[in-house]
Image (cartoon, rainbow, N blue to C red; front, side, top):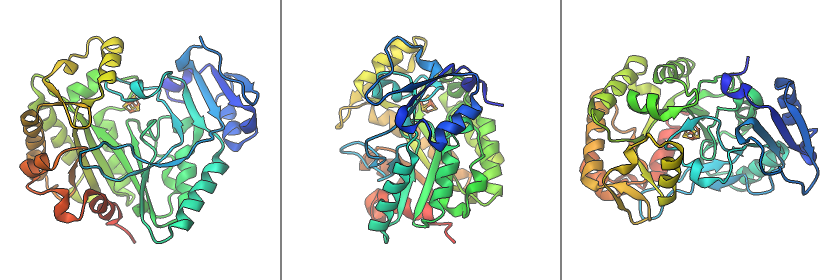
Amino acid sequence: MLPEYLQGIARVAVDAAVSASPMAHRVRERLPQAQWDILADGEHLEPGYVQEAVLYLKQYKGRFVRPCPGTSHYQCCGYQIIHIGENCPLRCSYCILQAYFQDRVLKVWANQDDLWQELERTFTENSRQRFRMGTGEFTDSLVLEPLTGYSRDLVGFLRAYPQVCLELKSKVVDLSWMEAAHDPTRVLPAWSMNAPEISAREEQGQCATLEERLRAARTCAQAGFRVCLHFDPIILFPGWEAGYARTIEMIFDYLTPGDIAYVSLGSFRHMPDLKRHIAQNFPQSSYIYGEFITGLDGKQRLLRPLRVQQFRFLVQGLRQGGLDRQLYFCMESNEVWQAVLGRTPRDFGGLYRYLMDLAFEGSN
Ligand code: SF4
């Protein structure tokens, strides 16, 4: 049975070049009621369709593997993206995809053979290099999994490449990829964490609850996987301390520090354009009107003392639960690192290397 957020897909458009692909067959089997349109080479989806109700299986012609865009002037983690599609049927008010893409059509790159070839080339040309990769940058890694089985395919493909650690970042629970994993130390299932109030109010469209995410994380940990947690975006609201303290307490109800590969912390930040989208699409979301300044990278961030206050509070709670080495900041300055954690990425050879070591720490 498909989750409700996928049951509304009334139409599947597919590029003729991939209409006979295994991905197209699979989706057709799982969405038998949907209208099925084949687009000839060069043909585009016509404007005016109901965006959320369309799934587009596309022959993707760009690069599948690319560095995470990160940000200039701040400490970046050197993660590599495996690009499998665009957009997401869930509705988080703060979602960056609103500003990235012009439409909300769910796109899946169905020419998987081209992806496999590019990955194979990347790994054989760099056979001595380790890779920390993930699919959760331009879509949620697992949100379309019941339809596409993409992560399961990817996990299966990567079994031949032990130099790769794949992170699957999500706000839903789908563990069907687990049985394709040959070595649990090479897959890092990851879930977003937030204060319960923010999760309930700002993560709409049937995201799993925090408890459901943590229960799934525990299932993964019991099967030998280590999980990642992402507190991003941390948002200021009246009573934020109590809210985040509750989530931290919940984390340790379900997981031990040894179950966790790393935890990222990122305060709400945005390009000016995103604020406009949030104001328009989620008029009740008031956190966009906080005390922001323009950072060195052009993004709006909370004033540094406020960010430090947020981070100190979360770090203290997470340290009390036994996490320390696993904590890192997403796109923060050395000053903030030093003020909160008492160390900077320079102290351990750079964030890229540090996270790579943490990702591979459980290696067999
Ligand atoms: S789950 Fe992630 S990708 Fe989907 S709407 Fe929320 S923030 Fe955006």
